[in-house]
Length: 266
Length: 279
Image 1 (cartoon, rainbow over the protein chains, first blue to last red):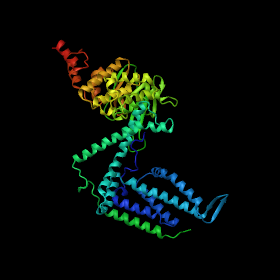
Image 2: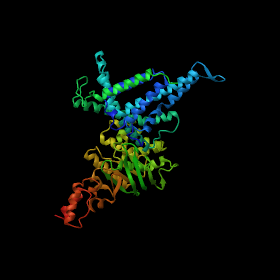
Image 3: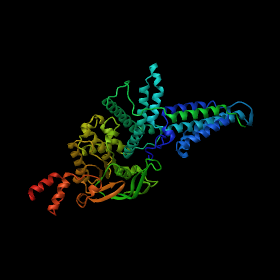
C-alpha cells in the first residue's frame, strides 16, 4: 500500500472556494445537483459544464484528479447509457433483428451521461475544497433545525465526523495486520472462495477487536475532557456568512437560472 | 544472510504526503549475528525491516535473502517468510485465535507443518519464551497478561523456525522484569544459532546484546559497525539524534582517564570492574 494517506479528495490548497462557508457550498452544490435533473436543453448543460470547469479552475485542482473522480462511476455510466439506448421506446432509427435503437433512447442516454458526469464534477468541487471537518460542521449546522422534531442532529454529525476521522486509521491498521499475518505465511488471495473467506478471519477479527478497544478509549478520553452528549458546545471554528458567500450564492443562482430558461440553440 | 543493495523507497509519490523512507541503503545481516537497528521515529527503520521478508518492494535496488532475490517475479515469498520471521511492534494486537495453541500454530500450519510435528513446533516455541505449553496451550490468548501476550506473539514467529528473527521494538510497553526476561530469551535464541535483528529505542538493550549497530537518519544509513564503535568511536549516538545511556556516558568519562578501560555491556559488569580494578 504505497498510497497510505491519499484517501479522500480534499485538496490542500487555498482558493476562493476553500474560503467559502461550508454550509453555502453544501447547499449550493445540493441545489445544482437537483437542478441537473430539470435542465431540458443541451445549451443549459453546456452552461453548467462551463460553470463547473470555471469552478474547478478556481479551486486550483488539477484536471487529472477530476478525471480520477469520474472513474468509479464509469461502469454505472456506461451501464445506464447502454440500457437507455436499447430499451427506450420511440422512433426507431436503427434495427438489427430484435435490437432496436430509438432516437429518444440516444437522446436520453446522452442526457443521462451528461447528468452523471456533471454530478461527479460538482460533488468533486465540494469535496476537494471542503475538508471532512468542515463538511460535518456544515452538515450539522444545516440539519440542526431538525432538532425541533427530536432529530439527534448533534449526535448524528458527531458519528459522521468520528467515522470519517477513523477511516484512514482503520486502513493503516488493516495494512499493518495484513502484513503481520503475511509474515506468518497467511495468503489472502489464494484458494477457493471459502478458503479465501476463511483466510480473512485473522485480518478481520483483530481489526474489529482493536476498533472496539479504540472506541472505548475514545469514549473515555472524550468524557475526561468533559464531553456530554446533548450539551450546548462552543465551536472552535465559527461559521459566519460573509460578502464572498453572498457573491457565490448570487452567481450560482444566476447561472442556475440561465441554464434552466436558456433556449435550445440547435 | 540478508543483503540489501542500494535500496531506495518513497511513499505517496506525487502527493503532498510524499516522503522518502529510504535513500540508497546497502547493508548485510550475516548469519548468527545480533544486529540492532536504531534511529529516531521516521528514520526508516520500520520500512527497512519490512523489506527483509518482501512485505514491501523497494522502488530501486535489491533485497537478497540466502542468495534469492526477494522481489524477483518467480520468488516464493512463503519460503522467504519462513527464513526471515518478522515480529511487528505490539504483535499481540494481531491475535485472533481462540487458544494460545491455535495462535502459535497459525504460522507453521501456513507453512505446511501438521500432525505431531506441529505440536512439537508449538510446544518448543512456547517453552523457548518461558511459557509452560501444558498450562497455556488451551488458554485464550486474550486473557494473558501483557508480558505473556508479547511472549506468545513472539513464540508464534519462533514456531515457524526461521533462521533470522526480526523484531520491531520487542520490549516497548513492557515492564522492567518482562523486558529483562524477553532480552534473555532472545539472547538464548541467538545462542541456538539464530540471527537476530531488532529495532529499538532503548540504548541500554543495544549496549547489552547487540554485536553490531546500524543507525538510520532521514532514510539514510549513517553508521554500520560494532556496538563498541557506535558508542565510543565518535559521537554516532548523538548524530543519529539519540541520547547515550548513563552507562555509556560513565564509560566515556572513564576512558578519558584510563585509555584502555574495557568495554562493559551491563551496569553490573561496570560496577564490578570499578570495585576490583579502579577503586
